[in-house]
Length: 222
Image (cartoon, rainbow, N blue to C red; front, side):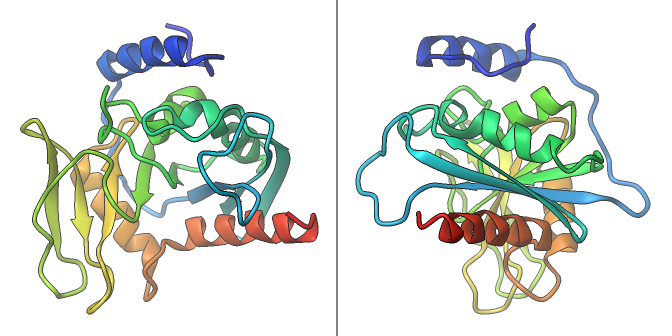
């Protein structure tokens, strides 16, 4: 199958169905890992779903290296179709790093998706990189919150399938939703995100990418 970015919703839905069914070798972390993060943002103060052509800023971070690209939203925001809006921008930002990470964190879901192929999974397939999604809340999945101690996790499930986990990073803080995506499962997602968080709630690579994208937006007056 072609692993690119479809130009319309119908084509994206077909691609997502194919991606969800695609066989890929499971990835397991080993040794010291190069973990990258990517993030896209749009003009502040906007209401509604936005529109195709809205200004957009995307960034990727790997260690102390960050890369920022500017462009335009490919579509309005639509749950389940986020790849139309920002997929190509995120791909460009990650490629602009100049070095491939071992695993990529994305502010998007993976298997927690109507067709089990959210943006985090799609991005990994396009880049040929293992990916993990990290969001504040699930898209479709449900599950009881984990215990209060840091490192506690509990499964997120859709139709009987474990597609991710709630992960408590800090005591007293809301847990993160971490998502199995391209070549990763829920256990791997938990391990990668927990190792990347340190003492703060957001994984460091994703936090640096978010800061870089938002700083670029601020400089542009967006």
